[in-house]
Length: 79
Image: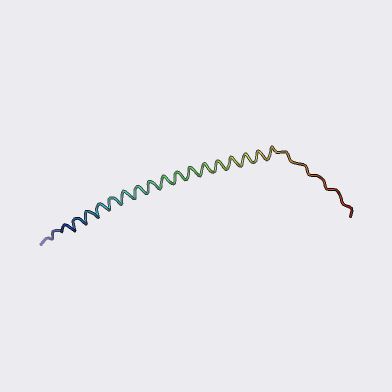
């Protein structure tokens, strides 16, 4: 005797098959998005580090250009 699947069983199997296919597609999209986010983060990190290096270099140059002020000598106090 062979069992013939009912309409409910057939529909359930079809829903599960479609859900599995959609899950595979969704996971691929998530991985793709993850790669894109990581690439963007790396790009932004490089820009930030380059900007910080440029700011540090300009600060060093500004400090080197600025003339140093002479300190006034303190008057000796008699002891």
